[in-house]
Length: 184
Image (cartoon, rainbow, N blue to C red; front, side, top):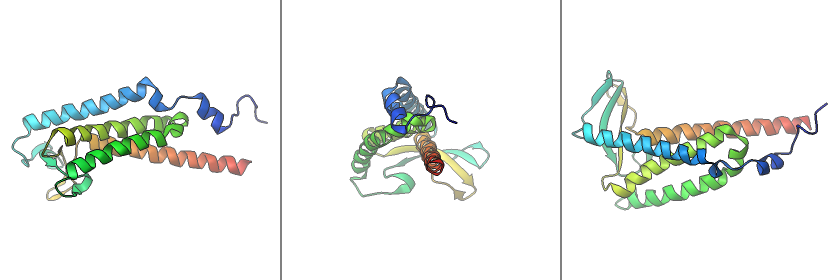
């Protein structure tokens, strides 16, 4: 038999807990990710010259190679206005993400971590788009010999990790809802 005091509807739980965006930890995490990205990019620009010259970190597998990406992920480019199109798109995505995941961040710690990590990464790359004519600073270069992944940065890593957290949180929520429906 379940204890009626321990069971609550999802809406009651959601209403009793603040969305992650309403907590200082959310904003601190965004700040930490954006700062780590900015500091690492400043280091790359200052020490990894000239552009496109690999600096081995772990043999040939992990190298730091300074490059600038005027487009978006994986080299996507929309012509001369790419910089501003992707900057505007970044702002829209951040706002939509924060609003769309408010309920999820109330009930999932993983989502409450993933959302600000994605937002911090998006802000890191957005700042580059706004201040650098050449594009977003990329420098992490992983691969074997001539088989390399796209060069990326700390912000890209944060977006990927945060998105992974959101996918897992959504999967866990769906699984819990299916179990609840089956038990009813």
